[in-house]
Image 1 (cartoon, one colour):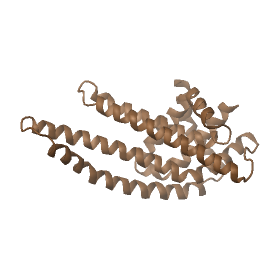
Image 2: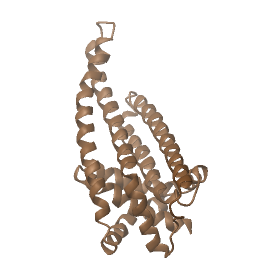
Image 3: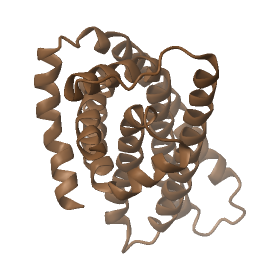
Image 4: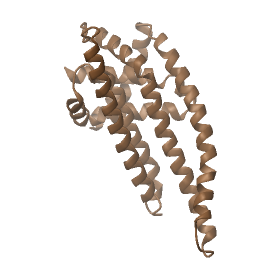
Length: 243
């Protein structure tokens, strides 16, 4: 798994070279705008809701003793919760809204790498089937990511565990982000269940791809290039392992 993770991270260098070679920059423009607008909107919403959540918790605390401590814990917990949920919402919305542009990008990269086209041409029944499949995977991943993140944040209330919770939440979100980036390729090859099996068998690829993707989002400027760059990198690794 460590080997897969390192290869997935190093694939970003190859992805940058391939983007230059194939002149993929037009695929970067619209996702960049989507990322920027969503990032600004959700950051403002998270900042507004963080203080309101803490105030709500303090207001409903029924005792006077320990109110100061409860207020501090509520401020920290609500801030972490709103930030984590906001980031999950942002990341998944970016991937969903950018999806129509990332799938053709992934197919173009795969065609270059293999010399073959996996597209079956336009077909309404297949389009509906792929849409339903994509929604099932997106909902599955969002629900699991939310449950795992909430569980980790609750564990973070235990002082001895709190230093490690941030890293654990980051890795969970990275894995599911990498899953989504890989699925732009997998949707052309596998159904719902087999796509999940493939990612489970290649967890390191999902994790490594997602780690760089998440770091790009966290830098601020990286939101402009994260979705397409991560998609190209994920396609490179996924196609190699499909063989």
